[in-house]
Image (tube, rainbow, N blue to C red):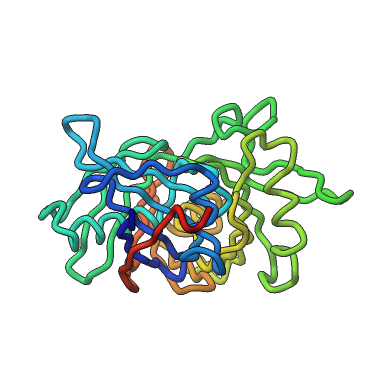
Amino acid sequence: MPIPFTKMQGLGNDFVVFDGVSHHIDLSSEQFRWIAHRRFGVGCDQILVVERAEKPDVDFRFRIYNADGSEAEQCGNGARCIARFARDRGLTQKDEIIVESLAGVSTLRLEASGEVTVEMGIPEFDPANVPFAAKTPQIVYDLEIDGKQIQVSVLSLGNPHAVQIVDDIDNGLVESQGPLIESHPRFPRRVNAGFMKVVDRRHVQLRVHERGVGETLACGSGAGAAVVVGCRRGLLDDTVQVTLPGGAARVAWAGEGEPVLLTGPAVTTYEGTIEVADLL
């Protein structure tokens, strides 16, 4: 049976979105991999499935599947697309939507500008909860990559991030170090590897090698994690423009114990149907 889908993108981070409220969506990891394949399937960085909420004070539940079929906890760009999808499909008339993912409950707000703001939760720095193999929390950790010591800041923003401050984001480190950081044994559930250049206190450039996907044009949770790292290291103000290969987002963080706010676009590119059985 053909399944309807919507293709969406946030700053070039692209998604296949399924309406699990109106349709029963029960697909395997292998099927998600095929859907995400850019030659055999629709093609995307991640697949999003919107479902009915299981809690009375939550509007929707959504699940995130990486291109390799693994399930992710959080996706800032995807969450923005979920808000736009729910409104455009008539699943809600609210401007403020409460959603639940594996990372927990968060608030999505549709702005008058057409952008969407995601409350991404409070950063977690305890290495045991990232998870990351370290005895005590630190702002910066030494990490051995390919026989060399690099310095990364590690945190969870619903999913794990390792952020490295670099002088040049186009020096080949994303390609050479990204996969090695992602699968480093000190990260038992793998990690998103961010490479951030600080332009000034209100502007950074960022590239992210995402866990289970590879480098994407934008990573929302990676943008949030990078700004948190810059703030903790005294390099950034509390509201920062993050320029990614796919465009710019705005991140605000008021400090320890406060949630990270991510604002940016969410765009529908096209709609279609896919016969999943034909892909297997």
